[in-house]
Image 1 (spheres, helix red, strand yellow):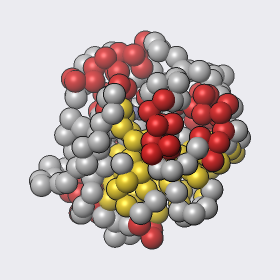
Image 2: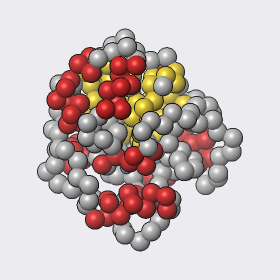
Image 3: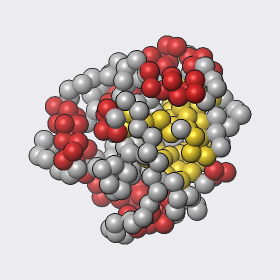
Image 4: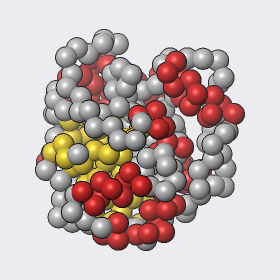
Length: 246
Ligand SMILES: [Zn+2]
Ligand SMILES: [Zn+2]
C-alpha cells in the first residue's frame, strides 16, 4: 500500500509481520528489504499493483542480514538483475559465506517472536544466498535516500532517510508490532547500542513517518515517537498502517 507519494509498504505475516518498502520517485525503482518468502511473491504482487514490473526493479537495499529481510533476495536478483546493496559487515552473511551472529536462547521479549529468536540462536532457516554488489556506509546517498548507519540490532544495520517525504526506513532498530518498541530485545545483538541508534534517528531531522521492519509503518509524529523511545517512554496514540498480506 502507498503510504506517501512513491513510498509503498509491503507486509507479510510470516517472519514476524515483516515489512519491506518500495520507492518509486521517478528514478530507479528501489526496494528496501525483501520479506521472508523465497519466491518473493508478495513483493512482486506489490510491484505489479504499483504499475511496474519486476524487471523495472533496479536497486535492492538490505537493512541487515536477518532471515526475514533477505528471504526473497536471490529470486528478485535473478528476475530483475537489480544492484544489491548492504553494509559491508552484513554482506558476507547475505552471500552465505558466514552465518548471522546467533542470539541467546534464553527467552526475551516479545515472546510472540520467540520462534524467531530460537531460529537465530540455533542458525535454523537459512536463506538462499545472494552476492552483494555494493557496500553502503553512513552518509552515502542512493537516489532520494540518505544512508544512516544504525548499529546495535546487528553491527551493520542501516537506516535510510528520505527527507523530501519526511520518512525514515529503519529496519529492526524500531518495531511497531506487537507494540512500538526500540526493536525486539530477544533478536538484538546489542540493545544499548541500538538505543543510541534510535536517538541518532530521532535527531536526524523532523520526520513524520517511520517505516519499521516488523509491523506496519508509523504514519505520524515519527521524530517525537523516536525521542520517546530513546528516553525509555512508551509512545501513545501512534497511527500504524494495517497492511498485512499473507
Ligand atoms: Zn533483524
Ligand atoms: Zn527482522
